[in-house]
Amino acid sequence: MLRPPPPTAVPAPSGPDLPRHVGIIMDGNGRWARRRHLPRAAGHRAGVRAIRRVMEAFNEAGVHILTLYAFSTENWQRPRGEVSSLMRLFQDTLDTEVDELDAKGVQLRIIGDRERLSSRLRQKVEECEARTSHNRSNLLNVAINYGGRSELVEAIRELAERGADLRALDEATLSSALYTSGLPDPDLIIRTAGELRVSNFLLWQGAYAELHVTDALWPDFGSAEVAAALSDFGSRQRRFGQVVEPGGPHGVASRAV
Image 1 (tube, one colour):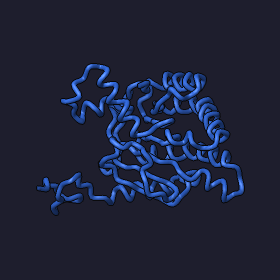
Image 2: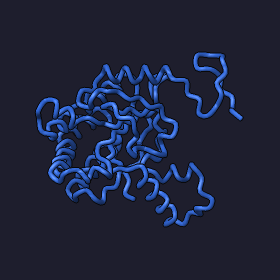
Image 3: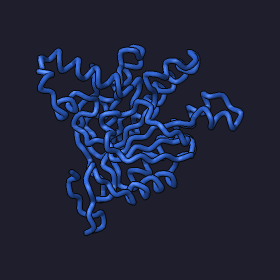
Image 4: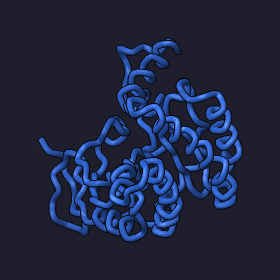
């Protein structure tokens, strides 16, 4: 499968209680527009504007790796006009934002199946990835035509084509064949607009991610919501299948039997 350039750097969070990597399921653009009696396209444009302020808020808080779920493999089922509008919006956004991303030291990576994207959009993606591939301050993955199930299937197929012995397949080998190879798994996944599902997003990588759901629609998501999500994350006791014994701010974990 076509994949983005490898991470140039894996920027660590600024504090031990912060997530290393945050994934966001950006939901609610259509509802935001409908409440304002606007076309859905206006909601998608507002959603794009939210990305910059959310990136800045996470960066200021000390979190430097984000993965944003922009367009799923299932989203092709939406009305043709809406899909076409979204694809134009993706391309326009790359055109207008790449200079600032580069200036701020952000490495942009597009994850997902690129084969269904137009040749023009694929070319733009590759240009922007090449332009920012040297950056080391922040890392932004944008998932376009992405599905967690298809990612796993394609990764296993690729390993088989390489001649890997699938009978000896282990977790590290499979992880190395995913779009997020070289990155820490997300510690926190945020879903906006109040929906209580993961929607085929980072199914393997998010196995132990903390989930934070907010009723805020994506175009309204900003620094206050970022602070609330990080505060919620900081209050969690992460067990990873272990038993946590008293002793220290987060407890001392011992393996459950």
